[in-house]
Length: 464
Ligand code: TAP
Image 1 (cartoon, rainbow, N blue to C red):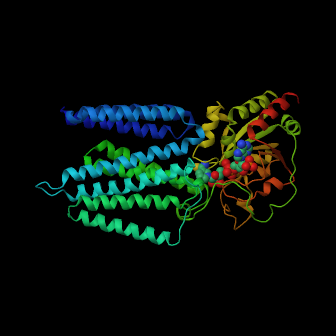
Image 2 (cartoon, helix red, strand yellow):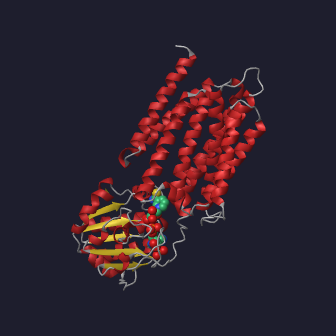
Image 3 (spheres, rainbow, N blue to C red):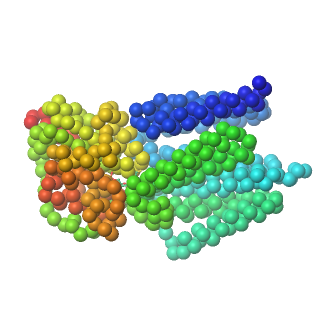
């Protein structure tokens, strides 16, 4: 076996580990091992690439790996769970930027030689430079919005869509000009500059709270740009890994949009979701009497229940109340209460947000129920304990045609015998609409920060 064959064989092994890793990431039970398998594949891929690299470039590559590795490892350890979406945005953007820079550099090396570059080289290089540029710029804006460095509100100016359309057409025209064999580094740089502008303009117009969907979409773009770079560099593993990222990002984007009952076009062009969470006049039916109670009263309801379903939402993440909710669940189980957690696919602000939080508190996976499984159980539930969730339990999604969330599948907590809602005020959630569940006669509000309210409940339940 010569060196080329050995490299390709090793790349095949790496590709298999990536596929196994992805497959295992689909369940919390196997996710950690899946991550380890894929990480092993990535270490092998880096090792083989170094072995295969031109010895003159090794020092540069190793310096890049060390600097990037130290920054990546430090950020991964230091990042707060609530800041995870912006870290993903940042790392994703860096991937897109790297693909664009490699393409510009490959184009620079390839033009001006005696033989003309092949059309396939030009197409893959241009694609990766342009798509990588959009992904880099868009991801940086997404990071800025989530980190609140820039305003999270959709920033739109009159005629923005028309300007974006003209920009897009200009990029395509420049790309076709270069792909036709006209050599010009200046035109390539201009096309990349316009793609950066397009990324900024597209993402600026989207509300901060929609950023997870946008990041997933941009993640798919980065994957495709990396795959195209693989064609440019004749690197099979990059083609496979990029395609896997591209496909999984596209699927995740589609699943998130579906779970919110919104089209991708509505997310990208709808200027929806400021993420401000302040009260906005909602659909009819939200006016009514709100019943609130003390932790002691709620503890009695919980302590004497046979089944309690806990519904975590974004507020659980904000309050960092995952450990104390587990404490309360343990306390209730000791009293013989059947405790389950209902997980809505878009509760929180990123895919799997609630699963990750509850896993951090070692909540057993067997207690977590997906929406489709638990919805049939609500009529047999004594108390639904809604912890910092709002939109995902809003009956308007079923009852109010014309509501922005009408048609979104929600958790049917209103069918349980009693509902207790832990939140700080009557403020709205992500969708900015009132929630008629809060004025339902069977609902009791326990106002306050979720962590404090849960801690009070733990103490009170002990005395029941
Ligand atoms: P939301 O509807 O956003 O409601 C969260 C509630 O938590 C708020 O009403 C807020 O009320 C409360 N809260 C905030 N901080 C709190 C604290 N410290 N203690 C107690 N309560 C607190 O959350 P949800 O029900 O999880 O729904 C998620 C929403 O985000 C959906 O509309 C979904 O479409 C959207 N979204 C999700 C994703 C993904 S992938 N998960 C991505 C983009 C958008 P107070 O201010 O009154 O406390």
